[in-house]
Image: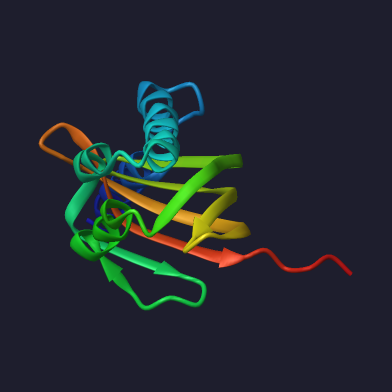
Length: 151
């Protein structure tokens, strides 16, 4: 009885581990997430609030250095207002990990923006969380922090 229970438990553990492990880099999901990251970046440079509206879940939470926590509406409203214009919005060093219906994208973000006529350059590390809802990847959380100064 104990042997049978342990065998079943071992099989369930293996199944759980296999479904929880990130998919390989060449998966269809990873390619789609790379494409969505490009759409995200391009949307900021083009001030395409409608594109961001499509990429973000309604329950989006945005946390950035020196800013209040934003939701989808307030985040996109900043772009729509025209008060901030992005001249550069580039990501690099991407890490993409897919877990069934969720994915985590990490990387480096370099952007140049104009705020009320003043140029601001940001260099951040970011973490973005996507979920798959209705067969579509949506951003539910985005966090960015200033890159530490090298010593």
